[in-house]
Image (cartoon, rainbow, N blue to C red; front, side, top):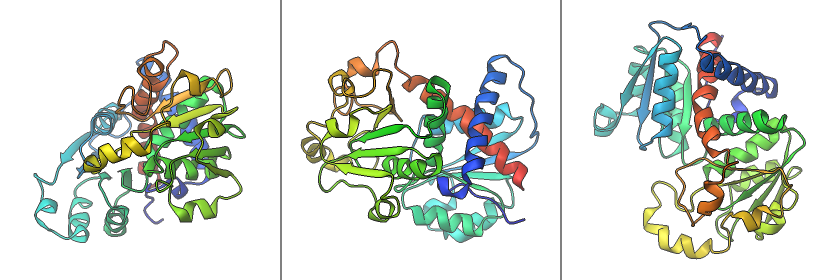
Amino acid sequence: MSTRHFLTLLDLSKQELTDLIDRAIELKTLHKQELESSPFPNRVLGMVFEKSSTRTRISFEAGMAHLGGSAIFLSPRDTQLGRGEPIEDSARVISRMVDIIMVRTFEHEKIETFAKYSKVPVINALTDDYHPCQLLADVQTFVEHRGSIEGKRVAWVGDGNNMCNSYINAARQFNFELNIACPEGFEPMESLMNDNRGRINMTRDPVSAVRDADLVVTDTWASMGQEEEKLAREKAFSGFQVNHELMSYAQSKALFMHCLPAYRDQEVSAKLLDADDAVVWDEAENRLHAQKALIEFLLLSR
């Protein structure tokens, strides 16, 4: 059997994704009840970081510990990757010494190359194009609070970035309608839009996107590596803040999600983020449980 990787949501079948979400919820319950087993003793996760992180590092490292294994943090400062070693060579060497690898990097082509030369499963922990692990956590959070996301209406408000691209793939894999509102010039990948025209609606008006939505999602207007564009982006995204007024156009029980870190009173109002019924903190925690289910799936697939 060939090595399975998780570079986008399309690397798993629709049924595999549904089963993985169910398993994540089960693992979360076992964790809360302190009934977890440690099925992968002596297994090692290699964590390759070119982009810094809080939630990604903690969730993967803690998750591997919960599963009985260990994790090794690798940054460009600590490895030959930062000194110009070819990705192919690093992948060949690292994958001979660990059992599974997660990579958080910039260009998506880098992780595709890494996976091509890896002997073990590779997980996309974020690239400039996709953030599939976050979508696992988001869907898990929706299922926990509202049941199946199939057939629901989801609104994306803001930048057509890696999260938006992954929401397009999620609409395809989990079968929901996706409304996208972003300013001109900040659209998601054109190829993804073309491949999913039957389930994607594009608009420049946040109200139109959010109307009757069951879930509203946003992200920071300036992602990592775009700091120099911050002022220009703030001007372009004026009117795209998600707040209680915008949420009033959604379904009365609509959820709001944000992958974090959030910039209060920019892409999201502080009041909405800090509301008593906010699920963004469940969403953040679920990175831990969804990724544990993913690691389990990939290790058992070997």
